[in-house]
Amino acid sequence: MSALLCLLLAAAAPAPAAEGRAALFGSVPAGTATAEPLKLSLADAVARGLERNLGLLLAQQGLAGAEAARREALSALLPHLDGQVSAARQKISLEAFGFTGPGIPRLVGPFNVFDARLGVTQTVFDWSALQKDRRARERLSAAELGYRDTRELVVLVCGSLYFQTLAEQARIETARAQLSVAQALL
Image (cartoon, rainbow, N blue to C red; front, side, top):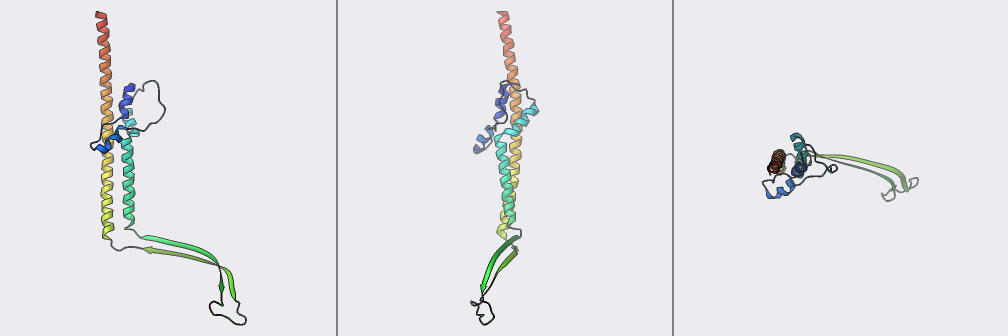
């Protein structure tokens, strides 16, 4: 098509909410710029829009954040495993413990002490954790629906801009033909 198509595909239609508008107008640059216009099919235009639309990329990040929050809320309902490992080299004074006498050494050691402990805790019932998990699931569902909505909006806008560009290109060709007819008649 023309360079106009590339410029139009870089911007998408505004989102219904005011805070989402700026992101949908943006795109992420990729590749190198070319001096000549690119020939794009409708599928190419939509694919480029889906790859580079900033609003869609932000929606993906929001979806990943909602999934992380869901996993964090779920972790409060699962058993917690705690482990501790320590190692030390020690000497013990038998005199400090009251062992004195002939043939009993004053110090024992040095010797190595290794300690490994493992603990598991599980809450039987936690109403607030259950509610937090339910809210996180609902937020995840909303983020998934928001992502799908943003994706469909990008596809719709890319297709619409593609066809608008074709219509504008046809109008330009019609104006050029009318100009050449007018010049011939003159």
